[in-house]
Image (cartoon, rainbow, N blue to C red; front, side):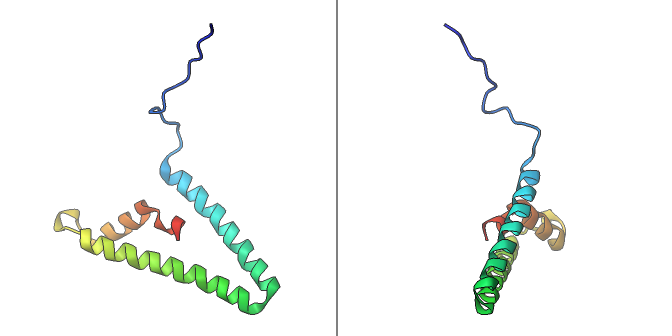
Length: 97
């Protein structure tokens, strides 16, 4: 009988969540660009609607992040602007928009 030794699932690789999410965002931007280009081949109205959907989803996501950051903000966190940028960066909510 042969035992297979593998590292435990708690051991992580060298890639960090931020780097993985950045790569995923780049891939999503390429997919969004391809979808917009495809919709423009169908018709200009479809292309404009595709652009508007991406813009509305992104703006709504950012506004919701600002609202949540405003609710969660405490004076111990420092300045609100700095707290807001950190929370938007760490939430990765644009990926799900």
